[in-house]
Length: 203
Image 1 (spheres, helix red, strand yellow):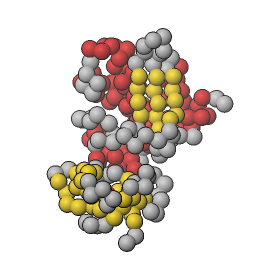
Image 2: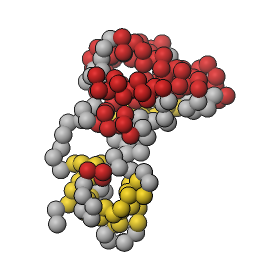
Image 3: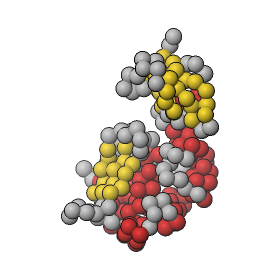
Image 4: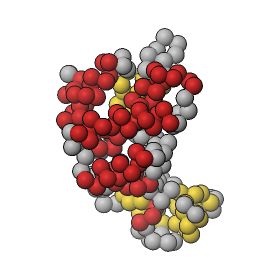
């Protein structure tokens, strides 16, 4: 199947042709990956005879998929220019990320709320869209809604919730940016991001 047609399944369709051209221009192996809870995407620089490699989680909504893809291509572009001399999320990467987002702003691809949040994020981009909470929330608001799935910040104090692996926790007090939660079975304490996705357990 044509590369652009495949990309249109995951990206806003009008963004797919440019991403397809980037894949060819940078000679990049672009992989649509299984879900990884810790990251939306990944960039690997050339080594051992392999070229540039980018992977992006298959289950992101189109706007999150596009922002993550541009984020990873900015790493690739920065590596081409500076190799290992540039910091992973240093000034060089930030400048490339801003520059590479521009065509998608000009195409008016993003809804107003996401565009506004991305513009703020571009002024000081963090390590990932997942670690910038306001951008993460704006992107995730366009996910297909599953009634039982919510985030830790939205459930009441002392409520029980379940992770994908089946473990059950109780939500306790907030400590600075994260919530202290107790695993019911082991009584161990864990810290959860406010936007961690969980399933509410009915008492």
